[in-house]
Length: 206
Image (cartoon, rainbow, N blue to C red; front, side, top):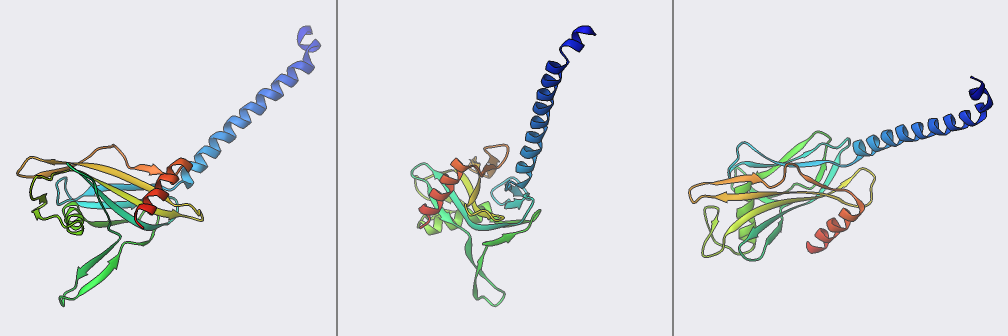
Protein backbone atom coordinates (compact mmCIF):
# COMPACT_ATOMS: atom_id res chain seq x y z
CA UNK A 1 0.00 0.00 0.00
CA UNK A 2 2.87 2.33 0.78
CA UNK A 3 4.33 1.65 -2.67
CA UNK A 4 1.00 2.42 -4.30
CA UNK A 5 0.73 5.61 -2.28
CA UNK A 6 4.26 6.65 -3.25
CA UNK A 7 3.60 6.02 -6.95
CA UNK A 8 -0.03 7.10 -7.10
CA UNK A 9 0.64 9.89 -9.57
CA UNK A 10 2.44 7.61 -12.02
CA UNK A 11 -0.22 4.92 -11.66
CA UNK A 12 -2.98 7.42 -12.36
CA UNK A 13 -1.13 8.63 -15.45
CA UNK A 14 -0.71 5.08 -16.76
CA UNK A 15 -4.36 4.28 -16.01
CA UNK A 16 -5.41 7.41 -17.90
CA UNK A 17 -3.35 6.42 -20.92
CA UNK A 18 -4.76 2.89 -20.88
CA UNK A 19 -8.30 4.25 -20.60
CA UNK A 20 -7.63 6.51 -23.57
CA UNK A 21 -6.40 3.53 -25.61
CA UNK A 22 -9.56 1.57 -24.71
CA UNK A 23 -11.80 4.43 -25.79
CA UNK A 24 -9.88 4.86 -29.04
CA UNK A 25 -10.17 1.12 -29.69
CA UNK A 26 -13.94 1.12 -29.19
CA UNK A 27 -14.33 4.32 -31.18
CA UNK A 28 -12.46 2.67 -34.05
CA UNK A 29 -14.74 -0.37 -33.85
CA UNK A 30 -17.83 1.85 -33.94
CA UNK A 31 -16.45 3.84 -36.86
CA UNK A 32 -15.58 0.71 -38.85
CA UNK A 33 -19.08 -0.64 -38.22
CA UNK A 34 -20.58 2.64 -39.38
CA UNK A 35 -18.46 2.66 -42.54
CA UNK A 36 -19.41 -0.93 -43.35
CA UNK A 37 -23.08 -0.12 -42.85
CA UNK A 38 -22.88 2.93 -45.11
CA UNK A 39 -20.87 1.21 -47.84
CA UNK A 40 -22.65 0.26 -51.02
CA UNK A 41 -23.39 -3.45 -51.32
CA UNK A 42 -24.80 -5.06 -54.44
CA UNK A 43 -25.35 -8.79 -54.87
CA UNK A 44 -25.35 -10.47 -58.28
CA UNK A 45 -26.89 -13.93 -58.26
CA UNK A 46 -28.89 -16.46 -60.23
CA UNK A 47 -32.52 -17.27 -59.56
CA UNK A 48 -35.12 -19.86 -60.53
CA UNK A 49 -32.63 -22.58 -61.28
CA UNK A 50 -28.96 -23.23 -61.88
CA UNK A 51 -28.89 -23.71 -65.62
CA UNK A 52 -28.61 -21.40 -68.61
CA UNK A 53 -32.30 -20.43 -68.31
CA UNK A 54 -31.98 -19.18 -64.73
CA UNK A 55 -32.55 -15.47 -64.11
CA UNK A 56 -29.74 -13.02 -63.44
CA UNK A 57 -30.67 -11.05 -60.32
CA UNK A 58 -29.18 -7.83 -58.96
CA UNK A 59 -30.07 -6.96 -55.36
CA UNK A 60 -29.33 -3.78 -53.41
CA UNK A 61 -28.37 -4.67 -49.84
CA UNK A 62 -27.07 -1.15 -49.08
CA UNK A 63 -28.56 1.03 -46.37
CA UNK A 64 -29.78 3.52 -49.00
CA UNK A 65 -31.01 3.48 -52.57
CA UNK A 66 -28.43 3.16 -55.32
CA UNK A 67 -28.57 4.50 -58.88
CA UNK A 68 -27.76 1.92 -61.55
CA UNK A 69 -25.80 3.50 -64.42
CA UNK A 70 -24.49 0.55 -66.43
CA UNK A 71 -24.85 -3.22 -66.43
CA UNK A 72 -22.13 -4.85 -68.50
CA UNK A 73 -21.96 -8.47 -69.61
CA UNK A 74 -18.53 -9.88 -70.38
CA UNK A 75 -18.28 -13.33 -71.97
CA UNK A 76 -15.00 -15.19 -71.86
CA UNK A 77 -14.47 -17.20 -75.02
CA UNK A 78 -11.80 -19.43 -76.54
CA UNK A 79 -10.66 -16.27 -78.34
CA UNK A 80 -11.07 -12.66 -77.22
CA UNK A 81 -13.69 -11.61 -74.62
CA UNK A 82 -17.01 -10.10 -75.68
CA UNK A 83 -18.56 -7.13 -73.88
CA UNK A 84 -21.94 -5.42 -74.05
CA UNK A 85 -23.75 -2.82 -71.97
CA UNK A 86 -27.20 -4.36 -71.39
CA UNK A 87 -28.67 -1.46 -69.40
CA UNK A 88 -30.97 -0.54 -72.29
CA UNK A 89 -32.92 -3.10 -74.26
CA UNK A 90 -35.78 -3.59 -76.67
CA UNK A 91 -38.97 -5.48 -75.89
CA UNK A 92 -42.01 -6.30 -78.02
CA UNK A 93 -45.39 -5.43 -76.53
CA UNK A 94 -48.70 -7.24 -76.99
CA UNK A 95 -49.35 -5.30 -80.21
CA UNK A 96 -46.09 -6.49 -81.75
CA UNK A 97 -44.51 -3.06 -81.48
CA UNK A 98 -40.96 -2.62 -80.19
CA UNK A 99 -40.52 -0.70 -76.96
CA UNK A 100 -37.25 0.62 -75.59
CA UNK A 101 -36.72 -0.05 -71.91
CA UNK A 102 -33.90 0.55 -69.49
CA UNK A 103 -32.53 -0.90 -66.27
CA UNK A 104 -30.94 2.44 -65.45
CA UNK A 105 -32.38 4.25 -62.47
CA UNK A 106 -32.64 4.08 -58.69
CA UNK A 107 -32.83 0.72 -56.93
CA UNK A 108 -34.24 1.02 -53.41
CA UNK A 109 -32.61 -0.51 -50.36
CA UNK A 110 -33.61 -4.16 -50.18
CA UNK A 111 -34.89 -4.04 -53.76
CA UNK A 112 -33.86 -6.21 -56.66
CA UNK A 113 -34.24 -6.47 -60.42
CA UNK A 114 -33.74 -9.24 -62.92
CA UNK A 115 -32.16 -8.44 -66.24
CA UNK A 116 -33.30 -11.56 -68.05
CA UNK A 117 -32.00 -15.10 -68.14
CA UNK A 118 -28.36 -15.94 -68.67
CA UNK A 119 -29.32 -17.45 -72.00
CA UNK A 120 -30.95 -14.20 -73.10
CA UNK A 121 -27.90 -12.21 -72.04
CA UNK A 122 -25.62 -14.52 -74.03
CA UNK A 123 -27.88 -14.16 -77.07
CA UNK A 124 -27.81 -10.37 -76.82
CA UNK A 125 -24.01 -10.27 -76.62
CA UNK A 126 -23.67 -12.71 -79.52
CA UNK A 127 -26.09 -10.71 -81.66
CA UNK A 128 -24.22 -7.48 -80.96
CA UNK A 129 -20.96 -9.12 -82.11
CA UNK A 130 -22.53 -10.82 -85.16
CA UNK A 131 -22.00 -14.33 -83.79
CA UNK A 132 -24.43 -17.00 -84.92
CA UNK A 133 -25.75 -19.28 -82.21
CA UNK A 134 -27.15 -22.76 -82.10
CA UNK A 135 -29.30 -22.34 -79.01
CA UNK A 136 -26.82 -20.80 -76.58
CA UNK A 137 -23.73 -22.25 -78.28
CA UNK A 138 -21.76 -20.34 -80.92
CA UNK A 139 -21.42 -21.92 -84.34
CA UNK A 140 -17.96 -22.90 -85.54
CA UNK A 141 -14.85 -23.32 -83.40
CA UNK A 142 -15.63 -20.52 -80.95
CA UNK A 143 -16.68 -21.63 -77.43
CA UNK A 144 -18.05 -19.72 -74.47
CA UNK A 145 -16.31 -20.43 -71.15
CA UNK A 146 -17.63 -17.98 -68.56
CA UNK A 147 -19.88 -14.96 -68.15
CA UNK A 148 -19.17 -12.01 -65.88
CA UNK A 149 -21.72 -9.43 -64.77
CA UNK A 150 -20.50 -5.93 -63.94
CA UNK A 151 -22.61 -3.20 -62.34
CA UNK A 152 -21.62 0.47 -62.28
CA UNK A 153 -23.63 2.67 -59.93
CA UNK A 154 -23.74 5.86 -57.88
CA UNK A 155 -24.39 5.50 -54.16
CA UNK A 156 -25.80 8.21 -51.92
CA UNK A 157 -24.13 11.60 -52.19
CA UNK A 158 -20.82 10.17 -53.40
CA UNK A 159 -19.42 11.70 -56.58
CA UNK A 160 -17.35 8.70 -57.61
CA UNK A 161 -18.98 5.58 -59.10
CA UNK A 162 -18.92 2.26 -57.30
CA UNK A 163 -18.97 -1.16 -58.88
CA UNK A 164 -19.74 -4.81 -58.35
CA UNK A 165 -18.95 -7.91 -60.37
CA UNK A 166 -19.41 -11.65 -60.28
CA UNK A 167 -18.18 -14.34 -62.62
CA UNK A 168 -20.06 -17.53 -63.52
CA UNK A 169 -18.59 -20.61 -65.16
CA UNK A 170 -20.49 -22.00 -68.14
CA UNK A 171 -20.34 -25.76 -67.62
CA UNK A 172 -21.61 -27.17 -70.91
CA UNK A 173 -21.67 -30.97 -71.18
CA UNK A 174 -23.16 -30.96 -74.69
CA UNK A 175 -26.74 -31.60 -73.55
CA UNK A 176 -27.25 -28.89 -70.95
CA UNK A 177 -25.34 -25.92 -69.59
CA UNK A 178 -25.17 -25.09 -65.91
CA UNK A 179 -24.25 -21.73 -64.38
CA UNK A 180 -21.75 -22.07 -61.50
CA UNK A 181 -20.54 -19.01 -59.53
CA UNK A 182 -16.76 -18.73 -59.62
CA UNK A 183 -16.75 -16.84 -56.29
CA UNK A 184 -18.73 -17.34 -53.11
CA UNK A 185 -19.93 -13.74 -53.12
CA UNK A 186 -20.16 -10.68 -55.32
CA UNK A 187 -16.98 -8.63 -55.40
CA UNK A 188 -17.58 -5.08 -54.18
CA UNK A 189 -15.55 -2.32 -55.80
CA UNK A 190 -15.93 0.59 -53.40
CA UNK A 191 -12.39 1.41 -52.28
CA UNK A 192 -10.34 4.13 -53.91
CA UNK A 193 -8.14 1.78 -55.94
CA UNK A 194 -11.24 -0.19 -57.01
CA UNK A 195 -12.98 2.93 -58.29
CA UNK A 196 -10.15 3.53 -60.75
CA UNK A 197 -11.04 0.17 -62.27
CA UNK A 198 -14.73 1.14 -62.40
CA UNK A 199 -13.82 4.37 -64.21
CA UNK A 200 -11.82 2.31 -66.69
CA UNK A 201 -14.93 0.18 -67.31
CA UNK A 202 -16.85 3.36 -68.07
CA UNK A 203 -14.18 4.61 -70.48
CA UNK A 204 -14.30 1.27 -72.30
CA UNK A 205 -18.03 1.82 -72.92
CA UNK A 206 -17.48 5.15 -74.68
